[in-house]
Image 1 (cartoon, rainbow, N blue to C red):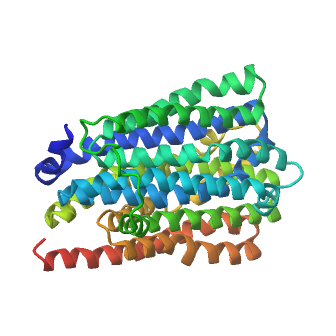
Image 2 (image 1 turned 90 degrees about the vertical axis):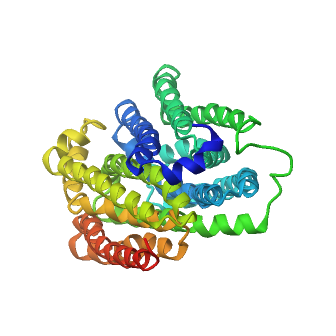
Image 3 (image 1 turned 135 degrees about the vertical axis):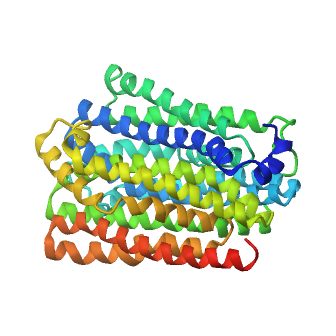
Length: 450
C-alpha cells in the first residue's frame, strides 16, 4: 500500500481487514520483542545462574523508566501522525517525524547520563543485595549506554507503523530479535562475557535495526520522510505529542514504582530468589501483554484516522473487535498459569526452589488476567483518538489507585503472598472502572450520530 492511498483505505476499507493488516505485523513484532527479552532471561538463567536472573529482575524498574520517556515521545508522535494523515495535514505529519528524532536524542542522552551517575544507589533502592548488585550493574550499564539508540529505534518504528508501513515496522523488530538471538549465545558462552554479553547483544541488534529505519525515512518518495526544516522543534507539535504520550508515560512510570515495591516486598519477605521468581513470572505474563500491545498498535492508526474523519461507527467497530481478540489472548495466559505453571517457569531455570516460588506466584498473578486485555485496549483507545485525560486516568487506575496501595498494605499482613495477590485484585477493580468509562464513551458516539 503506497503512502498516498493510506488515508482513503483507513476510512473506507473493511475494519476486520484493516485490523488484520495492521495488527498482525505489530503482534508479530511485539511478540518477537517479548521473546528476545525471554531469550535473554533463558540464556542468563541457564548460562549464568539463578542469582543472575534475580540481578536481571532488579533492572526492570530502570528499564521501565527508560521506556516511559521513550513512549512519551514515540507513542504521542505516532498518534499525532495518524490524526494528521486523517485530516490530510501532511506538512505537520512530516514535522512530527523530525521532532521525534530531536526529542529522543535529547531525552535519551540526558536519561543515560543521570542514571549512570547514580547507578549503584538506584539499584540498591530497587532491591539489590551484595549477591545480586554485580549482575544488575553489569547488565544495565551497557543497556543505558545504548539508551538513545533504543529511544530512536522505538520512536521511528512507531511513526513508520502509523505512516502506513506496518510490515516494515514488523520487519525492523523481527530483525532485532533474530540478531539478538544469534548474538546471545555467542557473547554469553563463546566470548564468555556472561550477563554483559546479553546486554551487548541487545544494543547491537537495535543499532542495526535503527540504521535500517533511518534509511527508510530518507526515501524522498515516501509521504513521510526526512528533509530540511523538519528537525526544528515546534512547540505545538511537542506539546501535542507529550499530551497524547502522557498516558503511556504515566503507565510506565507507575510500572517502575510498582516493580520497585514488588522487589522490595519480595526481598523483605522472601529474599533474592523471590525477586528472581517474579522476574520469571513477569517475563511470561509480559508475552501476553505484548500481544495485546501489538493489537493496540494495529488499532491505533485505524481509530485515530476515523476519529479525525468523524467516522464514529468505524471507530466503535474497530474498538469492539480489538477488545474481543485481546480478551481471548489474556484468557489464554490465564489458562497457562492455572494449568501448566511449573512447565512454563522451568523454561528459565532448573533451580527447584525458584521454580516452586515462580509457579505459585504465576497462579496468583493470572487470577483475573482475562480482564487485563479489555482494560489495556480501553486505555489505548482513548489515547488513539486523542482523549488524553481519560487515557491517563485509566492508565493510573490499575497501577496508582489500586495496585500501589495493595502493595503497601497486603505484604505487611500476608507476607510475600500479599505481594502476589495485590496484582489480581487491582486487575479486577480497574477492569470494572474501564467498563464504566467505555460505556459512557459509546453513549457520546451515539449522541453525535455514531
